[in-house]
Length: 172
Image (cartoon, rainbow, N blue to C red):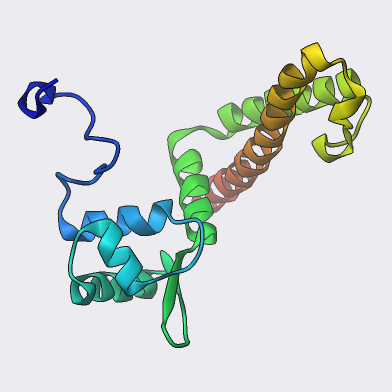
């Protein structure tokens, strides 16, 4: 398929930020990084100069989006706490306390279902090799989903508490 025929499609896999400006490309490079990286490594991924990457990284570090690790060379990594904070605030802003409580209850029910099905308190307690080989893939899918449900419930509960305290403060 010709490059021009993908007008509304996603960008090429190897260049996911090609239409973004430098600031967005640096943000994307940090966001997708799985370990601390130097400004040069981020610049390479963001297809920009090292000086441009360093300037944007400094800005993001000031905002708390990235963590700057001093040393030679300086390394940068995404601040997972910032992204969690952002997600909790988004949930609290977009949902009512009642909607958040209902979601927490749904997720709690899902957790109980997994606990009952696997006779375990957490996914880490499940011995996958104890299952028939034909079902191992299904067990891995369940365990992955279980981990996701645990995390989603934690985030929704934080958002519910935040929304509850915001509502209580506005009625004071």
